[in-house]
Image (tube, rainbow over all chains, first blue to last red):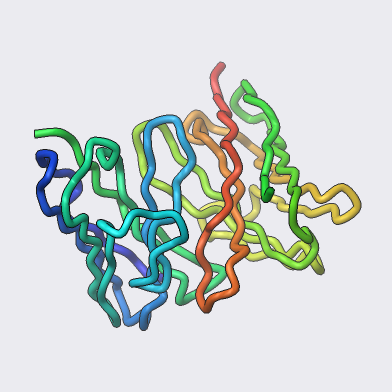
Length: 108
Length: 121
């Protein structure tokens, strides 16, 4: 199975900061990479699919990039509602998908 | 409105089995696959497996092979996930999720609300 490694596993940031989260695949997955946001007690929410396409309704401060094995999720200006855990997910080997370990973004 | 509504919380003893259901509405259930994902307390997301609602074909994660069975009933637009021989480390929230998007790639744009399964003696 394809392994997904996220870094960092946690970070502290302030409102207005630019935040970058990385995700690395154990083999090339082309651009079959998705990003989710999860808040405590809630189901994950799709933010970005196919590496860089913003899901409908998601604020434009979120962006994704990358291809092959290395991907990034960027929040251009962190807002109070963005404090959450973020997961990447590969869909190259659909339906055998795998998630990254998650990145917890909390308040500095 | 697209929805996946899951069954309620369960408490089970070690060695028992649990079945979690996931009822779909607002879309043509039989034309989409559905995955199950679990999340242990304080941990990340773990994919358990996938079922085609169209023909019942399944694909299970290696960690659950032999212990999980996923089914889909198109007459009631309901998917079920049975996990057997429960252990304490099966305590988790179990989610069903599907991909309704028309773009290339398999991304979960619809999730159930989650079902907490607690395994305790």
